Length: 115
Image 1 (cartoon, rainbow, N blue to C red):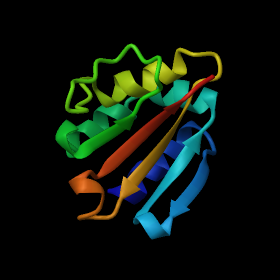
Image 2: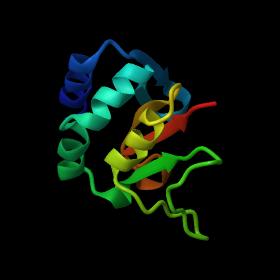
Image 3: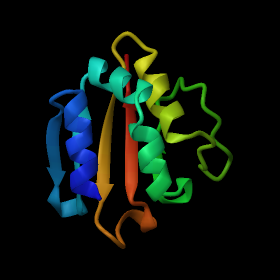
Image 4: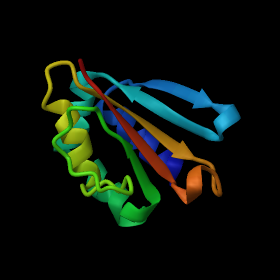
């Protein structure tokens, strides 16, 4: 599934591959335009069909409008996390696919970034 998802993400744009071998994950850094394209397309829904929200993590910006509970649980869909970054003029995301059994059982981590 990871190869298919990365190939689908590549259709939206180039992205910059990133590997954190010591942390057991690979991913892609998306530009602002790529972030917007992913948020507006089918990829978040397709990923969510295979990866439940309980297996996704989100690194939110301090000024996020997404609700995060007192235990750190993010209450948003993958599309909402990506879309919020895309709604900022310089907003981007980094998407990591984690090796099985690493990162507390999370399969996917998404990190927002904007200034």
